[in-house]
Length: 139
Image (cartoon, rainbow, N blue to C red; front, side, top):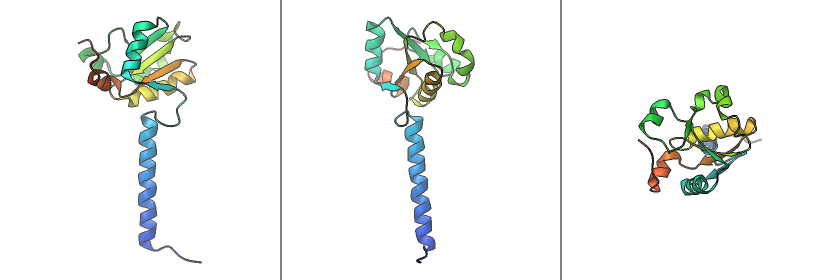
């Protein structure tokens, strides 16, 4: 039976840690292990313009929302989303476009919404990508 050297063990630990971090990052962005769809900011914009059966949800902080937000958005910070789902009553049958700053918190929020029977659409890249694609925000 061969034994691993200390260097081999450290290499295995290093690469295991690297893979774990990569998987965690992809999970937090909503790229893997999702039970919701993600859409681009342009797709979200078109849905908002052309479909009355869509709700827009901002899951950032009140301070971020006050600084800038997408017009027509409802603010429910992700930290209190589970407790404030009643604010979304009547929209369970609608699609909910969910955004945050960069896409991490909206992925967390989308997972919460799916568990509660909602149909979320996570905006890839959040409001940062929304603005980068030339779409307007309200100040």
